[in-house]
Amino acid sequence: MWEALQHTGWATTLATTRWLYALVSVAHYFTIFLFVGTILLVNLRILGLAARNQPLLSFVEQLQPWTLIGLGIALVSGFLLFATEAGDFAAATPFRFKILIISLAIIFSVAVQRNVSNWDRAPAIPVKAKLLALISMVLWLGAILVGIEIAALTGFG
Image (cartoon, rainbow, N blue to C red; front, side):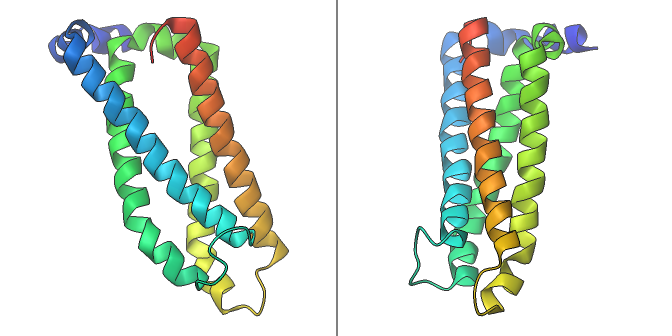
């Protein structure tokens, strides 16, 4: 299945057209910085290390559209890059590990986002919130580090 994806016309064109591959790569990295950066800011706010003078809920609401746009573009561009070497990536343990970490990071980020309104009304941000924020940060850092390792091993990136 992955080999078939890799050999579709559009995947082959993307893989063999340098400027197009570079454009998709730049979009992918830029949007990763965008959405992970906004998630990091929210987590730092929950931990009391950033934007302490802003109410948590309004801070999250300001960043959420950028987070969602960045995540959407990163997922699409990541799939496009994956498709160029789908057979190799799908078989690689580091790539599978990256997908697992990203899935967990998204789950923890969604858990943070869903609970923000409750935590904003609390007299102090609960320890559970801080733990979720910390785990989210560690998972996103792990996903980025594994992604760098994959790029180094495969020559892509």
